[in-house]
Image 1 (cartoon, one colour):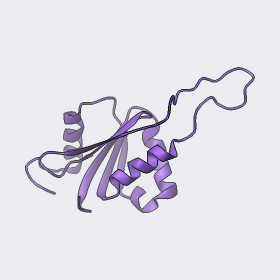
Image 2: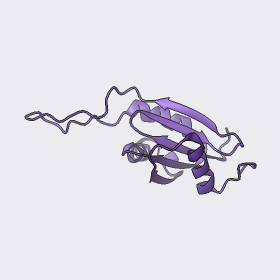
Image 3: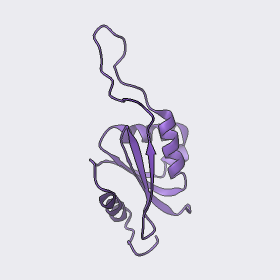
Length: 129
């Protein structure tokens, strides 16, 4: 992949789906999280919020998958999208500067995500950007 590509990342706490959308057939990479259960429960008389911290290893794999993208759109249903962006600002600020938007998106199909990204980036399905 060249550095002149557009990528969309759909992410929640269990996996990330990365699509490079400049080709007529979008390239897809699925990155699973190895966290067992992100939604821990807070118990009475126990210190802490009951939430696990950011899964840095997961985010590192996502960052590696989008490292060649010139423009990045991050979407997802939970706060993982914002956590990813904040982690990128911390560890990969140059890459974080290529994130053009972070938006909410429930659980769209692959086709819907690619269509969203192509519309967002104004990329024609039959042409390269």
